[in-house]
Image (tube, rainbow, N blue to C red; front, side):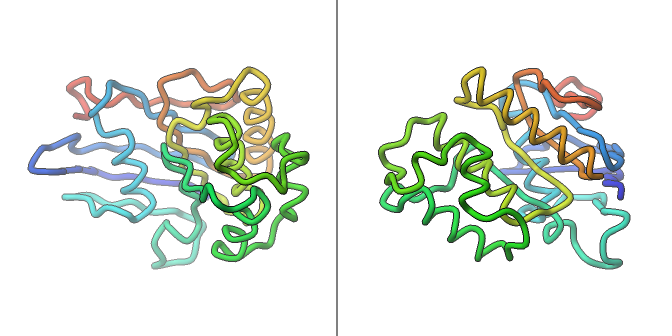
Length: 203
């Protein structure tokens, strides 16, 4: 499986964020998108996920279903955690499991993998920012998809949480998965290639 972008141009609000961007990401590898705020890192993730349309160019996932968009093969976890504070941790994850089609770990197993097993019945409004981020990342485990699209995946995570994420990411890559991550911080995972937006060549 391989993710390909060809001559990709993104325009938002009348402003060109980047133009003629090209890259390839093979199975088992990570693409780290770096650059200053406003350079288009989050917009690029949304383009890949199919949440935005490119002004020009194309995005394809070779090895997926022919003619199908990339979105159904991808998990998109944005900068916000998309959790419901009134629901318990287990209820949040169960909802996402049903919405995304399941097929992976149980909610209990996923919570345990992210160090949240003791908090399954706690309303998410009582979670810290780091615990909310762990819960968002647990979605990756309850409904497996080959492509992870992650916006600042280690935001609010402590050192232990960052190690947990790195271990999960390494396992995903070892199984033939791909990761595209917008990040300001170095990703402590193997097989990382980088593109930097806002440097003149791609922006």
